[in-house]
Length: 147
Ligand SMILES: [Zn+2]
Image 1: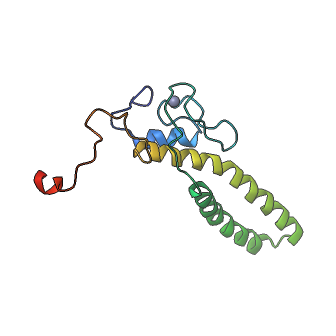
Image 2: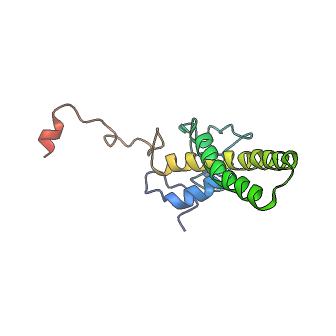
Image 3: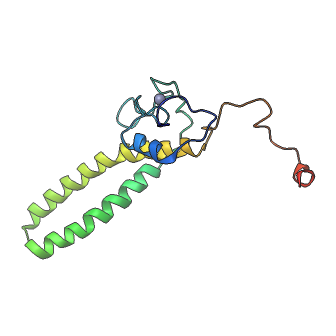
């Protein structure tokens, strides 16, 4: 499979990269860890030296975490309340812990996936190592001349 190894300058498969990202692994080799702590991204993969500092995940992982956790927990809260009518203190305790636990589980995994997506789509400097002449911006007026 094309999952391992250095594929800079070649096509980058999105789904293997996203799987590696969910496992908090380097999108390039799938072996080295992306994070040095809970959410701090390494500058380079410790195994394949792929540059990871280009990532611009920003608030995206938090947004996706809130989106997913909200859509999982809100119907669950309604369903449990409608079916069981538990004591409010028990319900608040269980769902508070569950919501925090699910959020803490998903946040680094979604951040890994977002970094992998950016890597696979060559966003924010994740492009190939510049080959001479390949990455040069066309001068103004070249679009008309090229057509
Ligand atoms: Zn790597």
